Image (cartoon, rainbow, N blue to C red):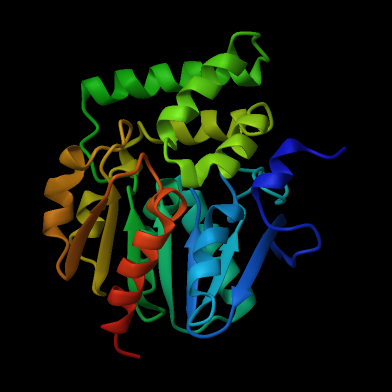
Amino acid sequence: MRMKRYETGAAEGSPRVDIGGVDIAYQRWGAGPVVLCLHAIGHGARDFEQLAGLVGGQFEIIALDWPGQGRSGQDTESASAERYSVLLEGFVEALKLGRFVLYGNSIGGAAAILYADRHPENVRGLVLSNPGGLAPVDGFARFAIGRMVAFFQAGVDQKRWFSPAFKLYYGRVLPRRAAKVQRRRIIDARFDIAQPLVDAWRSFATQEADIRAVAARLKMPVLYAWATKDQIVPLKKSRAAVDTTPDHELVTFRAGHMPALETPKLFAKALRCFLSKLSD
């Protein structure tokens, strides 16, 4: 059965790798120093397609599909930043990547922070767009997370009202015109991706999801590329953690959640500038 989520991820026929029994699809574009890209929950490798078109002549862009998203197979464990960081370890080992730049968005950003903390020798630089785990998880946050879990559970349960509600929601998550095509793919895949969304959002309320202390001990240069129109991961809630990151710079974009997808040319310019300053 061909699933709608396939269209959000790596192209048909793209390479695959088995990571601990999980079939992970991924795509490679361009040539040069590697930038390994990690997408937000419910998205896929095509989030980085426009970026690859802009910088693929200078860098190799590698983007994977998280389990149950894009063209990757299902996982035996629930989605979380911690779980994804473990899968990322296996992915890097399988591809024998050496040193690379790691770019993560949302839950992909949280997984990138965890990986970079454990394997600083592999990460030349870290690029983070609206990463999870840097805002306090207080009572209000847990209430909001609970509401989001219930919302996505309606997708799992195939509730009739979920389709128009999800379309409205994603119009706010990715509002910029440049994201229109991928936004439509994600909306079309709403029922395919509902369970990973439920699992990931449940994980956001756990103690292990708070990685502010991890960000404060990162050893490599970090570029925070933040979408300032984000209503789910607003900069103001994460700013204290951003400011504790030892070697960092912050660039903001008028986007909803994913600058590389919504403002690709401006993001590519900021990325090139950041990468030009990195040592080998």
